Length: 179
Image (cartoon, rainbow, N blue to C red; front, top):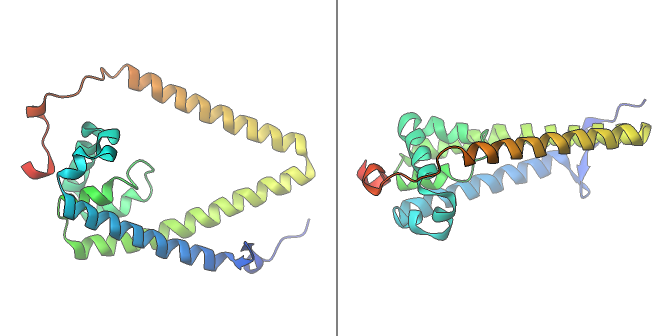
């Protein structure tokens, strides 16, 4: 089996490293927009359609993470799928020091984007290589991954259904304005 030249990897005819660099810059830009929207709108974000969809209790948990860890939470949110798109605007609403925020989000983009991009590219290449050698085994791998994902979703939905589901009384919920 021939090992491909890693510098020859490409997506849509562009070198993979360039696609990754553009993705990192785009994500960094999105994180800055999230922060400034959160900072500008503050409490109004919680009453917005997105805020209602996420749910006040979840947002409160994110607020607590930001209060406890500050800019380190911004870096960490890149590695936690649920936090990645919630924490930046909560950090803005809580008025996390922008110098620390921009540093943490830049470091997050510089580490998370390449790791996930090259990791996913490697997984895709490995699966395609497997499919070329054994289509049945490649289909079995897809079936196992789909089954594992379905079981995980089912387990999370069950756990969510048994958590009581009753929201806290309004006076028991602290918002970013109470801090």
